[in-house]
Image 1: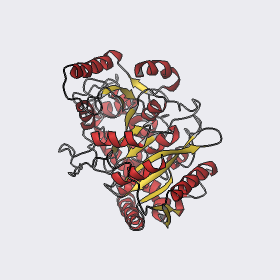
Image 2 (image 1 turned 180 degrees about the vertical axis):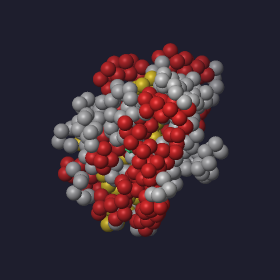
Image 3 (image 1 turned 90 degrees about the vertical axis):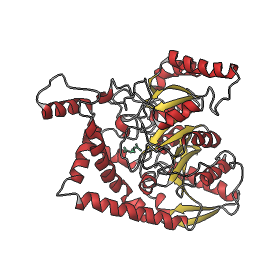
Length: 448
Ligand code: GLN
């Protein structure tokens, strides 16, 4: 049924970059054979899951929607993919994304621009736009994305579904092609909070192959979901309701906060001045610095595209990278190399790390006064294709409310909370202290 939905809706939605129907059937049949043999089945037995094309899948192309990895077929599975297979899920296909996860609209994909299923003239958000659109268009009930500065929460908000950015260290990044290693996390897209909790139970947990993976037991998130939280305190950062916030989005968020009050929650005024003022600036130094280093491995020698015009070694590197990387990726490599260069490192990179610490400190202070922080996920609903693609700064600002969560390493999620008058979904963002996803899910579930 899901393959039929993919076939029917792909011409309009363009969520996938790779679907191999025969392979999907083989996987499903293998699970069915297991069932018939009376073996114990995993919790996702037979459930299709779509995978962002930044996660390695053994024997299946993994391209990051980039020309430079056009013919790359990994010899191994990412940790989260292993976990899905062990739970008997069926991998239905690889989803479109902004090249190397750099963007907020999927317009930076070298393959295609994914359309928002609610209005196909509009973007689905990014960078995990394909994974979000696939779930919103019911081409898959579940999908995985990655979130470095908002790439799960923002597309979830714009496509009217649930998206989770787990605490840094909660989910292994082994087999995730790195963008900014101190920020990247893998997380689920689902239709509701229960599915998100279930998928997190499958993918979370310690893995020795990722040195930032934390060895802590994974709570049974689905078990405690129904329990309401007595005396719930919700922190509302006053800076998240500033001039840049669309009035209709603000109205939906305020209405959601009222609902929570009706459910017994107390709203607490909190302040995140550094997040509001500096998060975007800090992010574009830290993320580009790390990206410039991570992307050095794509040199036309080890993987992917190599230029036909080979010259000497350096010339071949330069030509291969020039042909293989898109404009936004090149822009970020240049920004990052500049911020790390000897004359500028102190002024930019080291300064950014200090402000990053201040952002974490102000979240720690805020969480001393409340259980979760709430606000908008994105300053506006889905925008038109092409509307911001010539203006990188306007595009960068669409992550203003999501980025500080990654800089602080805390957990966050977006849940649907209504529509604009034009019928576009709006997302409510919940932020929780590190490793408190269990409480965050319970709070999110109360709203459903
Ligand atoms: N939109 C942000 C960027 O372009 C965040 C991307 C992400 O989370 N992968 O970098």
